[in-house]
Image (tube, rainbow, N blue to C red; front, side, top):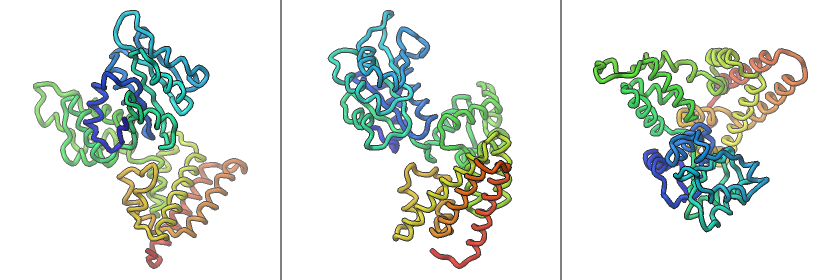
Amino acid sequence: MDVKAAQSESFVAGYLRKPDPALRVALIYGNDEGMVAERGRSLAQSICPDLTDAFRVVELTGPQLKDDPARLADEFQSLSLIGGRRVVRVRPAGDESSNAVEAVFAATAGDALIVLEASNLAPTSTLRKLVAAADAGAAIACFEDGERALEGLVESVLSAAGLRADNDARDYLIDNLGGDRGLSRSELEKLALYKGIAKSDTPAADRTVTVADAQAVIGDSAAIGLDDAVYAAFDGDPGALDRALDRVFAEGMAPAAAVRALQRHTDMLHRLAGAIDGGARPDDAIMRLRPPPHFSRRAALQRQARLWPAQRLGDLIDLLLEADMQCKTTGLPDEAILRRAALRIAQGARALAKAPARR
C-alpha cells in the first residue's frame, strides 16, 4: 500500500491510530523529519502505548539489519512474555534494510508490527518499492506541511489545550510556521503554554489566541531564519537581509552553512531559469521542483525566477564558490565574507529590478 503525501491528514491520522491488523511492515519516509518521527511514534503507540516497555518494544537500526538481515524476521516471529502484540522500530532505515524486510514478508508466522523511519527515499528506492507493493506493507510519505495541513495542526494542538485561534492569528501562524512538523508542533505547544490551558469556566475571550499572542511567542524565532536571509538577498532587500543574518548568527549558525544555503538557492534558481528559457511557465517550473518549496515561498520564487537571468546566476555560482573557499582558506572573518557576498547578491537583485523586464 502506498499512502501518498497528498492524501488527507485525517485519513493518515485514522490509519495510524487503527492500522490494518494484517499490516506487517510500515515504512514512514520523507524530508520532513519531524513528521516522520511523529507518525512513527503514533503508529507504534497504536500497538503499545508505552514505548519504553522492553517486553513489547524493540529498537533497531538499518546498519544492524545490514549486518544481520535475519534479525528482523526473528523479532517479527518472537512473542512477548507478558502478552500483547510487539513493535519493532527501525530508526534510521534505508535500502540496506531491504533484505531484512523481504524476509519478514516471506515469514509464515509472526504478528509484530515493524515500523521503519527513513529520510527521503526516491521512487527507485528498493525499500520503498518493496513495502509499497506488499499487501502486508504500507509506505507513508511525509513531506513539508501545506497550508491545509498546517491549518489542521494549528486547530488540533490549540483545541487540545481548550483554545482556538481567531482568523488573523490562524493566518499569521500558517504564514510563519515552518515546514517541519515537529518544530511547528513545538512552537504551537509553547503558544498554548503562554496563553494558558483553558478550563471549563474560562471566559470565551480568554480562550481565543490573538495575533498579538502568536507574535509574542513565535515572532522572530519562526519568521526570521536562514531562509529569510536567503530570500531577502535574492529579492534585493538589504535591510531584511541584515536583520535575518543578525538573527541567524545570534543563534549560532556557522557562516559557511549560510554560504551553502545561498549556493543551493542559486542552483535552484539556475534550474528554474533554464526551464523558463525553454518555454515553461514560472509557476509550472516551480511545482516540478523536488522537493517542492514550501507554499509560503512560491510567490517569492516566481518573482525571483522572472528577475534573475541564467547568465547572472552563473556569475553568482562563481561568487559563492569563491566565498566558500575564502571561508575555508584565508583566515579572514567568515561572517564578514558571507555578509559581503550576500550583500552583493542583494545589490544585483536591486539592479535587475530596475532593468527592463526580460520575462
